[in-house]
Length: 372
Image (cartoon, rainbow, N blue to C red; front, side, top):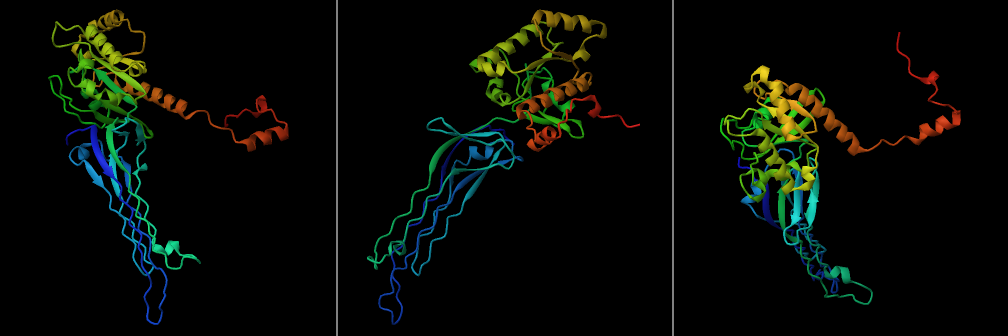
């Protein structure tokens, strides 16, 4: 399936039905009175976050989405039926923006989340609504109200805890395939990855995190070179970036340090907020370096790169060093999640009970004891 993370659509909610002017006609009842019903409401347009979707390709080729209008009111006190609603399924992480003003209207951040992106128009009043003691034969009615119409821009930013960053052929796809359930295309030439890949990494039975792999960056990406800059937006919601570096490039004329510095510069040019995210250095392809040369090569790289943060040495191909890395990643992601949730509130019932009893729970006598 083709990956599409940006699309433009036109939506229109249904118009409300018109009210009806009608009078009751029955045998032996000369003045039956008004009986014109109201028009029905127009259909709404909803958007639902579908966890089974990971692309906006459906909206690249289907741009117009219009709900049904409400039925007109009728005689004999019959109100018009409401128009059918329509529901648009979108991937989790979709941002819905007004294409005319650039205003962000909605964000679908949770699976199953349902929002109304265009409201249907209300139905008009029939003459039954205008009946009164001084107006016994009203001939007034109101037309239905128009439904909302919008030109929208849909932008997908994948929801991942960890993002992989690096040059083409740095081994990012091999790493995500080694540690997660993702199965991206892997080959011995650069630019194999053409769109983001998501994978779930299982650390334990109830411990996991989501990692995202985007196409590799090259120098000049912020000016449009290569593909990676098109997908950097998918890293903006991550909690951690892994800067994957090929420590043993096939071409002897390539300096891994210069490549790593170029990536950092492109990141800064694209988005300062993305550049300031927590970032770990992952030196990959250690299996291509002789065992007795690894320590010296890693030390030389870190010194010339002037790196002060965490450094991990791995071989994604042989999975050497991958297990400790994913455990450290989970600990970091879990700690970030706890910080985002904030401190838990203390139940006031327990605070009151402690005060009433005059107990000091810090007393060592109340410390838990080990079972014999």
